[in-house]
Length: 187
Length: 194
Image (cartoon, rainbow over all chains, first blue to last red; front, side, top):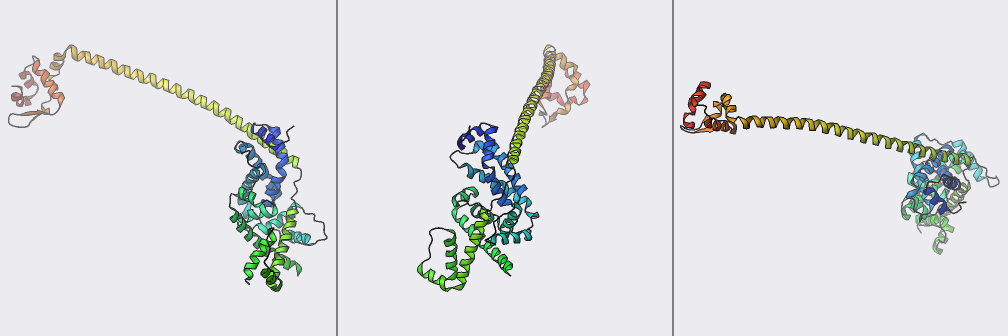
C-alpha cells in the first residue's frame, strides 16, 4: 500500500496508473478549490483540474522531489486556470441578485452560512473580476486560498515586494467595492 | 500627523501580525474620525474576506472527476502508443523507399556511365588506329576561317583544335593542293606552312 507522497510520485514516474489515481484522489479537491476561486465556475474548474492532472501526468518526470508537490501542482493549476480565464473572460457577467443575496447571508451573523457554489462564484466574481490579472491572482491565492506569501511568490514567480504591492491594491479595490455595496444594502 | 501614512500602517496592522502603532499614531487614531472610519472599513473587509475564505467550494461527485482524469490519461497514452506505432511504421516504409530509390538511381547512373565509357574507348581506338586517315578523310574540317592574319607574314590560330588539325595535316601525305581544292581561301595559308 502506497502511503508516502514521495513513494506515490516515484511510482507515478514509472507510469503506474493506480499510483496516479491515489495522487489524484488526494489532491483533486485542493486543485478544484483553487481553480474554482480563479474561474468562479464549477464546470470550468473541473475541466481545469482534469487538464492540470493530464499535464502533471505528462510532466511528472520534470518534478523535482526537493520541491513541495502541492506548490508545483498549484503552479500547474494556476497557469491552466489563467489560460482558461483569458478565453472565457469576455463572456462573464456578474449576477447582482446573487451577489446581494450572498452579501446579506454573510452580513447576518445569526444565519448559518450555507452557500451554493454558484452564489460563492458570483460573489468572488463581483469582487475580483475587474482587478488586473496579477492583483486578482495574488488576492485569490493569498486571501481566498490562504497561502503564505512565500508560496504565492513561487507559484506566480514574483518577488515579495510585488506580492505585497499587488495585494495592497487588490484589497483596497475590494474594500471600496464592499463598502459601496454594504452602504447600498443598509439604505 | 499625516492620515495617509496612518492609513497605510492600518493595512499592515490589520493584515500582518506583530505590527503595532506608535503612541503618537494611536492618539491620532482615537481623535481622527476619518482614520477611525478607515480602520473600521479595513477590519470589516478583512472579516468579510475571512468568511469568504472559509466558504469552501463544494466538489460534488469527486470519484467521477477522478475516473474522468484516469480515463483521459489512459486515452492519452493509447493515442501516444498508436502514434508511436504509426511513426515507426512510416519511418521504416520511408527508409525502405529511400533505399530502393537510391539503388534504382545507382543502377541507372552506372548504366549511363558505363555506356559513356564504352563510347569513349571506341572513339579513342578510332583515333589511335588511323589518325592520318581520319584527318585526311576529314580534311575539309580545317576551317580556314579559324586562321587569322595578324600581320603581313604572321598568322594566328583561333583555337587549339585547328592548330592540332594543321599539325596532323602537315605530317600526313595530304598535299596543300588538295586542301586548296577543298577551300579556295587556302591560299592565305602558304606562308604558314612554309
